[in-house]
Image 1 (spheres, one colour):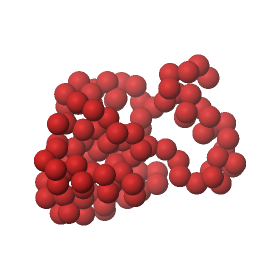
Image 2 (cartoon, rainbow, N blue to C red):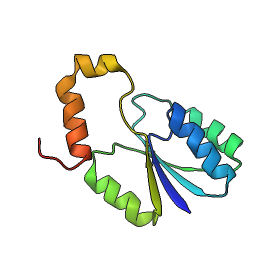
Image 3 (cartoon, one colour):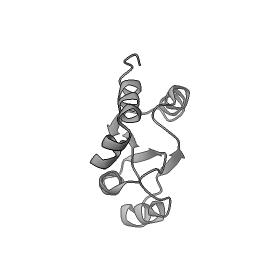
Image 4 (cartoon, one colour):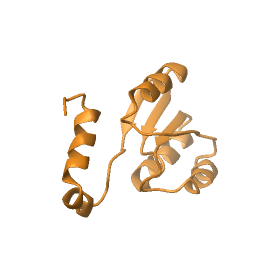
Length: 108
């Protein structure tokens, strides 16, 4: 199965990617690296025993999402992309709300 994991280089996403790879799935990771680092990718590959495809980008980019879903013939999506700290929601509430609205195709 071809699985798109948004936020796949973060803590929970990376562990999920390792398990998916170990179970023989093709993994495509989409992450904007705002809460993670590219250096986790070789670790995912080493532990998973297979090379994941990595795309640096944002889930709010509709054209990119369409391209990934089409070009990689994605079977399923596991969505972990998001901001992780409550403090960010308090400091930038409108930015967080805008991200959530765009994610769910709700108007601003």
